[in-house]
Image 1 (cartoon, rainbow, N blue to C red):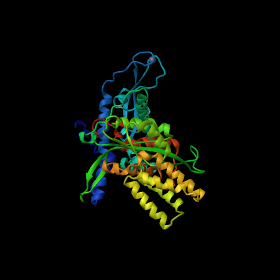
Image 2 (tube, helix red, strand yellow):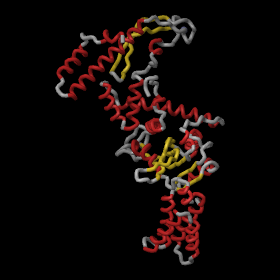
Image 3 (cartoon, rainbow, N blue to C red):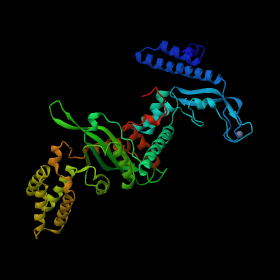
Image 4 (tube, rainbow, N blue to C red):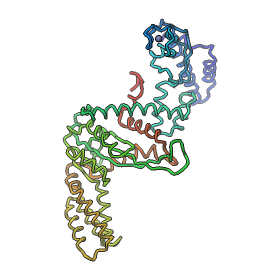
Length: 454
Ligand SMILES: [Zn+2]
């Protein structure tokens, strides 16, 4: 590189200091840290000298957006941006309208470098800050970044980058939602041939997140809001070392939103279309008993997917029936429950329903027990088409909605429900799309990083 020899300026105090630190380093760690520090100073010189070179080239002035007159140079003005290497400065020509239109200063070099007019930190620093914020609190992200970039980065700055990147993700999603609402078909994501023929599983659930009482307020009672989470994945069979066949999720995609079913519906539908809902040979819908989500299934997915009620949720309800019917934790209740659970699992739900119906005919049944039994009966009957567990097992399909629960844990619990954590609405709304983008493999596209990164 041409500028490299010029850039190692021995007379620079920072370089001298860095070289001395390297010389004096005793341990390997000291040596590495000192060398890294020096490397950063040198890298900064490389960047600055390239910038200085480019700033000397003749500037081609664009016409004024107001009057069309060609802009006129007002000479060199200093520009500063905080980057991964530290604070970098450069001089570049700025131009104004010769007729005095109110367009401010225009800097063609900044534009060529992809630096926005009011941008104070560079894209790669924001990228790293947002990546950290996906996993750790803003204050921790700022601290790690300070250590890494040797510049002062405040938690507030990281928060603001997350807001900006979150806005880009939200706008991108909105464009896609609008297209589907207009009747356009989204382009399905590309899949490997063996995955394209695998069953597509769709599941959904809600998870509660603690919010601050009011925007900007930290005092007062925590408000809990439900976040709806959807997961879409291809089901693959995997053989373990002991020869067992287990179902594994491939090409996992998540959807999540703070809002009601109507807000969630188009998002899940869009994701389902992109994951091949219309072309998959088999589609299964997995959910526990939440009524709203089953209504969503009936309305939107029933025509394309086989509904499966989470087996553990169904069994739990059967236990409620057993406890009410046989009056608590008696041996009888447990025995019946064990038997009913077994029959449910091996696809004789009609027997279980029959037993419950028979119990309801006993005139001496206490009212509270009757009430519970009616509820359990109605529940199982409502889901009569979603509880043929032996059939699902034979087809290699899951019977539990565990994949939904683990998605909720990863997406929401892990980052949003830390000890003492309470969210502002804007804070949460903009971080969530970044976590989603991360897990869905679309995170890097939110940042203009150029062709070198992957
Ligand atoms: Zn003008």
